[in-house]
Figure 1 (cartoon, one colour):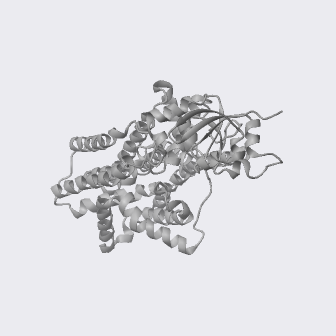
Figure 2 (spheres, rainbow, N blue to C red):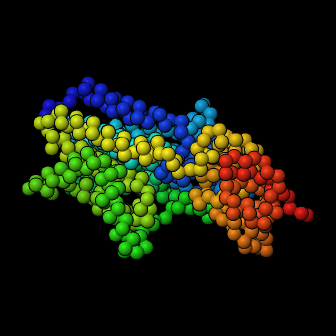
Figure 3 (tube, helix red, strand yellow):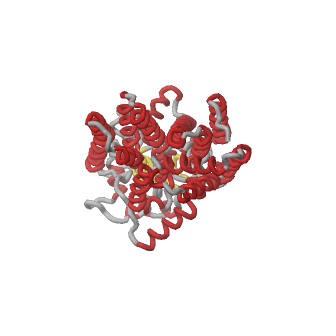
Length: 496
């Protein structure tokens, strides 16, 4: 197959980005909904708190804060802070985070293109990798929602690109730039530092001819990219301990039984990988690449063998340690794309090396299947995964204006601890059930009374059983607003 020239490549990549944009554009102004809506609203609530309260990057704030300032520990909130800065220009608009996530995704696809070209010396395979990245079903969805991973992945992928520019072409500045990008990606989400397994494998492969100057730079690379990440998460843990607010877990979550582990692994490999991570066309390419590798008599001598082997080994351990999360949160597998998609692109290109029309047809099929899989299920689902009062713009606005912006509220039941707060644009106390409000006294005081004493002035719920509880009802004052199933009440002042 004749390789694409640079001019053709530019048009091919631009076409892919435009197709992706036009497929997403109808949902640009939608409220966060569907899969991972907890993660979306949590991210956007941190964005709001930067914009409306304190713009200090190092003091992220959450809504489920009681009467505190809401400062607590989490991943490094660079994504949230960038979106919040844009609000100072655009105002608080739903489309802002979607545009940023899409731009970050295109940048990630470009990095995937350059990595594939570097590894497999093929412009065509690199272009295929670009399309595989944009239209990986999971990336197609995640790349248009409020998810910090959409920033972390391209940061580290570009870090890998610049590492190779230093490693092979000895461009001195590139190793520092690479380390800084790995640092930022690891700060945003820790697991993306694992893409550095490819760096480790490359160093292991080439260690014999290295000079002491190169070892010194490698040591600097490791210090720059890893030590500040560890320092941030230590600081973040202290923020959690001082605030008592554990809104984001910073711990590993392995399976608690062998049966559960086998169930999740079966689901991951038989459903998540082929249907969401790859897409079926990319899976064909990856399977072909594995077949070509197994047929090769000198497979262990391939220059990519050791880097990829270290990557697979390292992330296999990570996968086992995060099985409880990976049952439902496929975006925890996004770091794998750094390896899976370039290999899949190489495999499909080699499989169809003399059939350019068929290769183009497979790419079209990849896009079509991605659209059919993700748009009805994730973007245009009749059940958005949130209450209708939050999904409908006018109903959502009616609830928001019923609550003064400086008021603390008690809201629930909401297992996420953040969805209701985000859509109501409020802060305060969340509850899961009525027992948390009046069931058990804490330090001799009814919890709801404690909330009122510390400043709670409004009560919001859509649960009739909560409203039928006489102890709760006795503490409710005037009904301010009813919107759908949601009711907003003033809370009575405590008797002195």
